[in-house]
Image 1 (cartoon, one colour):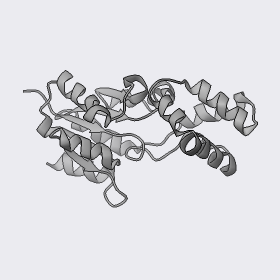
Image 2 (cartoon, helix red, strand yellow):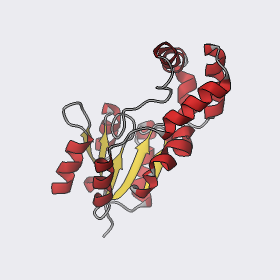
Image 3 (tube, rainbow, N blue to C red):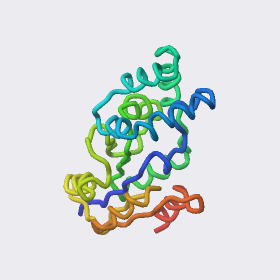
Image 4 (cartoon, rainbow, N blue to C red):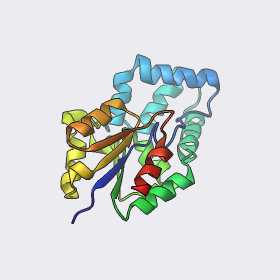
Length: 199
């Protein structure tokens, strides 16, 4: 019998750190505004594989008036030093006996290039799905990326689980027939994993 899949989100679920967090507060706010308010389509294109981290940081360097090398060094260091609780990763590792574990994230090339190897995330997940390489977000085409993995692993969808802080992603997964646990401030990733570990 094929194992169900345990899909786990990264940003806002496993980790709460941010790229460029080591910039000054003023510069950090400017980056957030430039990418995720004024140029949201540019950021979304990046997360779908249409730009590289180098191109984005070059754009930001020009906008902020700082050398590319300076912002690039900060960006890479911040990507490599994101914090994920070790006990959470160990619990996910134990759950691999019962589930195919897939880290599924709407993210950038930098996540796969710098964060995954630095945190050795491949040791805890059977697969890592990054929208940058998938070319699609979780809710695109009514959850096509979820369907693709369920089909690839021949997994029973009704016993497959998503843990994610996104309401939209959870709703999409439930519409496919899966079980979704939404991460909130009251019920974090540890809460949901403990519940699964005991079931």
